Image 1 (cartoon, rainbow, N blue to C red):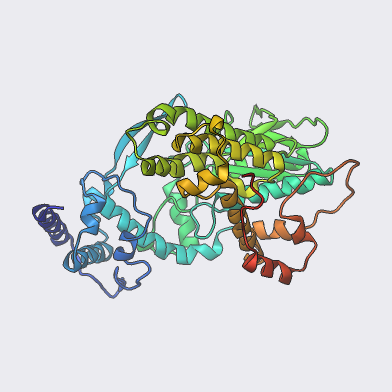
Image 2: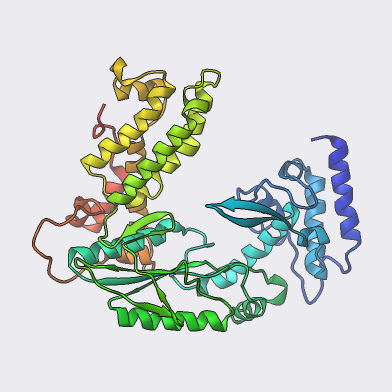
Length: 455
């Protein structure tokens, strides 16, 4: 970064700070941005939470990270003045809306000022300390230590147990219409005040998500839950999107489920894609694994001419694209997989179709997969899947009581199994036949090799 640009940048901050009213602290608001290291502007800046796209002020992330001690001190002082005065620089409040196209429809993304994002991150971390203990367990979005895998595993485990013991599960996948755009600010402030958040720490879009799954054992109970949810949404100014909300029933026989939102009937489907994973009315994930393999094959076909077999591109660059695009497309949601021999063969075939071409080989060369892995210096995808599944198992074992994934992991469904061979299920059978102490020991010392892979 040029010295002149950096100097101009710091001077811009100085002019902004001098235009704000108030001191860095007062009797009413004694807090400053430098009080806590965890939520200081410097900590937020050097975390991995800040995107690179600049806002209307054209301040880039490289500019911020190039600041020395003096520059960081000025920025921290600016944040403290902003906090004490309540006057936020105009550039931090202004967003640039960029149109995007997705699946034949149009949308928009708002590019915000990066310094403003850092200041918002400081407030968000302080708000989280207050509201985190009061957020309901079902909410996993925008929370530390939680993610989509928690929700996916919980739903998958419930469906597995219900199918094994021939129990019916009625589901409604509810989508909120323009959820983030319709958040009523007045209601939001009221909720935060109920949580004990003071006015200077108010920040929006903290605990909202636009996809909800309602579960019940019968269609009557599910309709009652849906009516209550719709009433709460209406009271908060939100609206259910009836065109995107659907119902599904997990049952060994075809069962009708008629759900209504107002005067409209929600369609009943046999499959639904929730958080990127395909769930079916038969509780089978084989279709989802097939879909992952198909997505990876589509990536392979798209990149074949421009990347995979392009001689001008180095092998290192090809493997970087392989790691960043192909592998995530193939392994998304693998924590839910039941890895059968058929799954192993298909996943490994999809993997090697990419790696053989990167190595400049074909099946006619009759080179074993193990040799290609060693030559390219990559780990087999199935080995990564096994390691990741064991990490997830350890995460479940260590999960404190009350967490939904841990509760469904420890739960044992009751009832009588129907005739016939049950499905292969997770976690591994050994975890059902040993004590918890033995499970902890296995997780800590179990070696993971490639002996189960097909060379």
